[in-house]
Length: 291
Image (cartoon, rainbow, N blue to C red; front, top):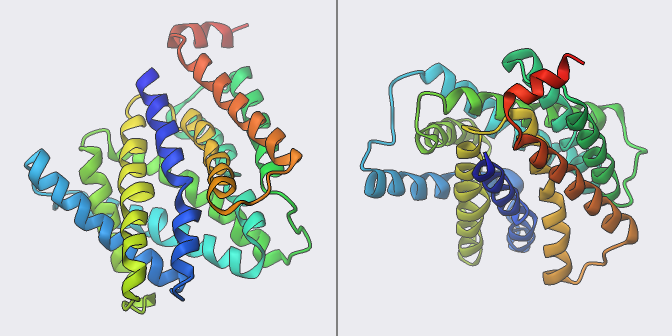
């Protein structure tokens, strides 16, 4: 269990580098769809090589193709398409804020699908991290249209669905192969929207984007879901924006406001509560629920 939480924290830290790589890539005039396409393509090459050389397996499978197609459609294509579109019609802060409605969806879906208990500590942690994300998002402009609100909330929902599908995927299959097939179908859905060509100077950053937040991030997260509840994993993963603002401060000199520091503290505090509670035995959770 403890290893699972460590994997989630490391995965979220990898995802926190997404904005850093994207900032450098955007300087080369690469559009969002093309950036995501190359991110997924390079990640597939890295992951496929890893599976063949180190796991000595065929990364492709003919089983449950419908599942991987659905997973790639929701977890790769829909999530990123909705996220970048929300950024386009609103702001980065607003989009990030609504992406992290995902823990709320995960708590509800985890209860309905997997029967995960709605214990008091989990709800307190959820309140802390959602409040923290609001503060970390900074000066968010809430004067946006209903379309941005709908696409933003839907982004958070697709993010939570990713965890649900991953939980099903890793039950009977290696997390590496699950990720490979998911990315493969996601690439097929992304291809029609990509321009394919990118400046040579952007390639090192695209490789970094593929390796750290994609290959490492999702492998770690998928492995963690073998041991950790979906709802707990989603709450702990909210340390991602904390990592992002710290990296932005260190690399780009972006100012850290008092509100962001308080928000970061709340997110980390909520994650610690979930972690500590997760160390208890399942019988203890069920016992407390009867009181």
